[in-house]
Image (cartoon, rainbow, N blue to C red; front, side, top):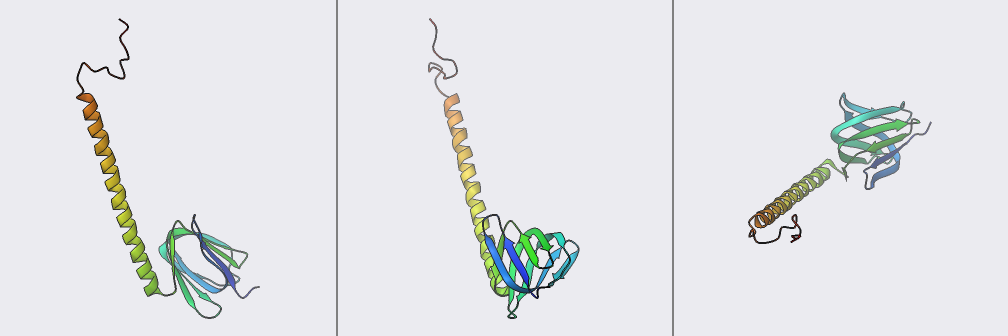
Length: 148
């Protein structure tokens, strides 16, 4: 039995963590908080939005905030977390600042997207009104040419 775990934390876009020197992992699912050590039984669970914590062989604590995900333990050594998005930090304070900045950026991006959709909708309505107010003498693109 190995004395360390191999931890990977991935998103669809990138690998956030890939470490062979992990001695313990702590996370949280719907039933509560749980820990994993080398030799743990195989496990598959769905993570709640939470902070995954782990300790490396040199005693350093690391953290990753996830908005939920899938947590897997296999072969008593391989621990995998697959999540849509995650933020890694060396301390909880550092992690809190990174998450706050990310959330502010997401809110700003959402606001810009809403504004762009509203402008596109308004433009489409103006074009439709302009078309409907066209003079009756103009040939409608739907009528084609007269056969006379």
